Figure 1 (spheres, rainbow, N blue to C red):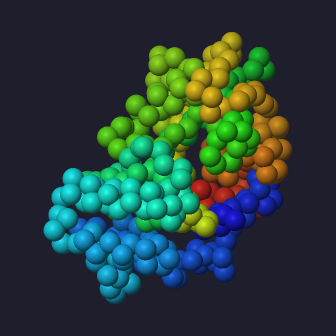
Figure 2: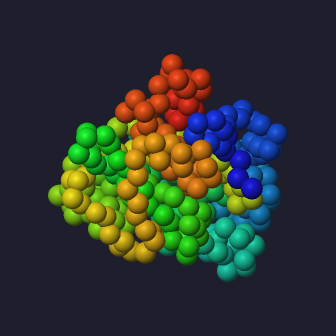
Length: 300
């Protein structure tokens, strides 16, 4: 079961607020993960116990924190040492989350604006509660009457997470060394066969941030949100197979779907942000308007 800290699913858009340390949260039992004297994540206590069996890489927990050994004093040394531990744990099968190994690295840093301190296998980031960043694209077009309509994808049934759920037009995580705009262009082409010259017209409009946890760890995430107005005659096509179908919906239909459980939760938040910014949800008619706006930008 996934607990969203600061945001999950009620009312108009299927979203319900919970406090940061609600009864289902393990926050109070997590240890800080510190690298180079900076906190970069939260390590669940059961994971900390396993990491302590690798004393050549991790110091014993002290003062509520787990740290890397002092000789691991550079980006490369830290990355290689932690990767060696993760590869060992993967072979031993001790942590189920590593069965979803992606061979894709994510940068590890206190804030997005900070210099990365190391990188880490994507599937392992939840074990350390490090911040993950991605790009989500709202694809839309204008109908003959000027009303906006939104393109929505349905995730493939073979996806590791949320198979068959509704998704944004395109989305993807920020891999180490790849920028936000390049990720946007890549995901648009791979997932929806959107040409680069169209994808480049997408406008950065917002970020959506939240934290959730499940049996596989802690997931603090922030998504860079883009709006992409598509030509009325353009139709996205299935690309890499991560999406099984695309739909073009009216905004009323989109709001109806947000009330249901059909959307992948973080994609619902991105769509909700779009509806608020384009005034399809207004404070005089939505009593939870302020809470929605605040919850979409939760401090990680």
